[in-house]
Image (tube, rainbow, N blue to C red; front, side, top):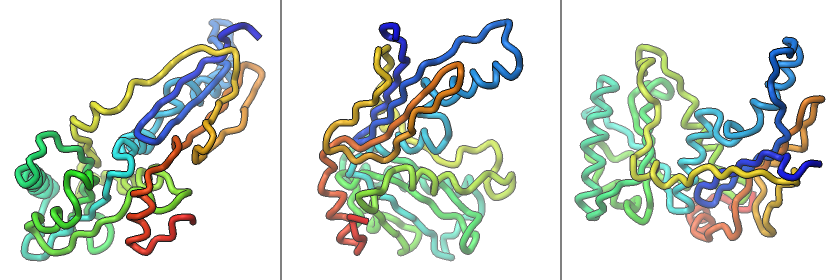
Length: 259
């Protein structure tokens, strides 16, 4: 095989690594529709898009930037403070997020937040991911002025869990044009967190084997897929060792870590 024939991409984010290697075809003006379809299958499932294709993929990477320091909060309004619109809910979140900054003195706030309002009792509520080192649960509860219902959960709930589970959950509610307008983002990432995502690594290799380091927690492995125009393989893992804080936080909530 020619030197450097494999096109490789790797994206790191906190403890998460996603990598794809592929032999990618080139398009030609002479390609028939069937040929282009087969080539597109390889192109679509390899390269840059293979590690960050969907909204869930993009959110998974941002969640991974929290490492083991992230806490997933559900902030609920009591009936006295129940907002009547998405914009009102957003204004209250913007006002609230500065309170922990004044309390702790942190200037750059790492957060991801999501406003929901269609399931449960159909009242607006906020999901937010914050750093425990910046805003411990006790501080978040103390500073939340719109009710007493503040729930906190670890980002990882077990050894075999991944950030993809929470990313899927935070993308479950779709814009409906009424409760959640079609032109509004469902989840928002702070600028300080966005800046922490490392650039995508790209290189050429003579090998299509993805080398997962010893001790890594393998989350996904795509066996080599091949058609007559190319092939690709994909893997996702946590780099070793996984921080023990994740295990301790899960145990404190009665979650069996090894499941």
